[in-house]
Amino acid sequence: MTSKSSAKFNLRTVLAGLTLGLTLIVTLSAWTLDLTAQVPSATDEILRHAKYLASDELTGRGVDTPGISLARDYIAGEFAKYGLRPGGDGASYLQSFDVAVGVMMKEPSSLVLGHQATLAVNEDWIPLGLSTSDKAEAEVVFAGYGITAKDYGYDDYADVDVKGKIALVLRYEPPPKDDKSPFRKLPDSSTHAALRTKANNARDHGAAGMILVDLNHTGDEKTELISTRNSLWRGGNSLVAAQVKRRLIEKWLNSQGVSLTALKEKIDQGGKPASMPVRGATLQLQVSLQEVHRRAENVVAVLPGTDPILKKENIVIGAHYDHLGLGHFGALARESEGRIHPGADDNASGTAVLLDLARRLSALPAKPARTFVFVAFSAEELGLYGSRHFVTHASFLSSTKAMINLDMVGRLRENRVTVFGARSGESFSNLISETAGELGLAIVQSDNVGRSDHMSFYNRKIPVLHFFTGNHADYHRPTDTWEKLNIEGMAKVSDLVLLSALRIDDSKAAPAFVSLPSRPSTNGPGERPGFSTYLGSIPDYGANIDGVRLAGVTDGSPAARAGLKEGDIIIQLADKKIQNIEDLTAALRGQKPGDEVAIIVLRTGKPVSVKAILRARG
Ligand SMILES: [Zn+2]
Image: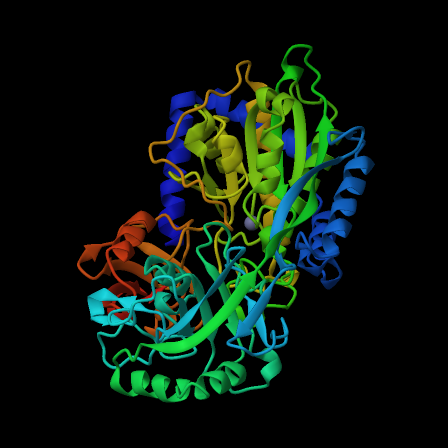
């Protein structure tokens, strides 16, 4: 594969050479070498930045963790060192904005079972983070696992009426009875087990509220209740909902002659719902939740242009410096919640290269004609908040003519860099290929816009480029550490971006915006829509081949269970031929969680067929 892509690549360089004429190529190369040599990339500096930003002291740079301020001050300090002008609020480098980081409970919140005393919140019960702020007082209807799986003929709501009642539902889902079952065995789970699915389903059946109980919990009572933070679902909340400790609800229902344990047993054994109203058992639930907001800050620095006219135009180079913090939101490994997510590749790497570029551009003997604006964005992981705030500033918006984003540039492999959005600027495609060619880098241009801060600019019709060195199994996990960074590779990305930016600057006319054919998703990384079928393959976005090459597979995922591994090239899924990532996405969309599908991969050149049982994402 290496030889194939580099062969293609050389051919492209040769073709470009023929088109442009040899003289021009020679001139460009000389220009290039000269510029990269004038202020060379500094690997020791890049390493220092990345290592510090990804250190434990910076607590994963979560917007609600102390480390984010250290990162902010470090970046501002570097910008000052390079003699860059502050571009934030007032005369500072910081551009501050508000961001919702979660919810917290407030008064009044209460739960009363029958005629008992009010239960102690956080001790005996806890609001679910997805709850609305509301109250309900109604009779309890036991609604099994709260699942409606029509295709499979299982419906906990089939024989009970929960209209205006409070649905009492069990956490998780029934154990799978057969191969056709959409349910998964713990610790796996299907979309049916998701709290959000249960809450929406209860709402759709007209319930006034939902009470969750975890009969599977066997450990210490202290860990039985799900923290409000971890049961959070951003936006579109459906009904008032809480979790109560099993000991308390069982005792109360036992006094009404109902055994939850026996009902659960009945469902689990028989594979059929055992829903029933609990006549006369009335409870009162009130939940008040408040969004928790934090101030977050972009760090903005300006290198004024030298051309009297062109200096009114900006080229923005950006990278988000926030990450997942302790991984409460956005983390992929549930068991690692509460652990520091260092985010070395995502995105200490981009921030380090951003600083390298700011240093280099500000030190060039001949400064660029246009103004360069360097932005370290915050709150990207929560939903592109920082970049969205930046583009709402009229002055920046109207003067910004191009935006270059660095997000995950720390794992260069086979000298291959993926560039998203290259077709959003008229001249970008050729410019990138030529520049990369001179630096000995292979470029894979993706037709997608990609999903990071540059989206906020693209949505405002500004041409964008997003540089990316590819996905890996450590993405959004505590294992994304600085030791795994390719520092030399980051220096090469710095060269590539430096030259590309200078070439954009070098042209008289600002690049014209080109709308890309497929409408990009407006979801930020933290706003992914609901549930879809999940395989757990980590595509190698840079692989320039027929099929989807895997950069890895997620541990414990359907792909891992099916025996897929790094280097495999998926060429078929079920009856669909797979040529690219979009094919794979569409093929997965045509499947349901729980489906068993045949997947054909090329492994060391030979086709191998495996079977995977798909799961729900979410
Ligand atoms: Zn990122």
